[in-house]
Image (cartoon, rainbow, N blue to C red):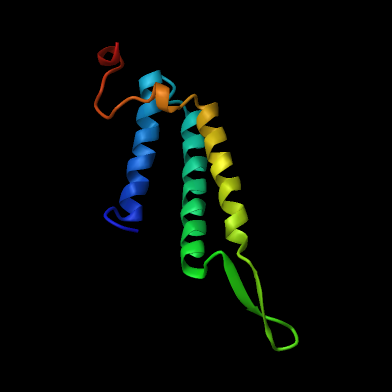
Length: 111
């Protein structure tokens, strides 16, 4: 993945989401559960990206007649769908770039 391992990045993303809710005073079970849903989608998104990286935009399959055929990689179509769902969850929790709180920053500091 690069400099950050996926598990480290995953932990940072989840921690950041929880901090956003805490800053709003919205760190209640229903929203914390939505963060778990978000992280499940995050894992799926990373798997889809890995599949695209490994297999490309198109994949070769063995046809029933013994030959091979080329088809679109289904992960290419699924990735934007998962991303859209992730954005919808963020919107539901009212987490956006214009309302983000930096780690360790108190809401009063932002005013």
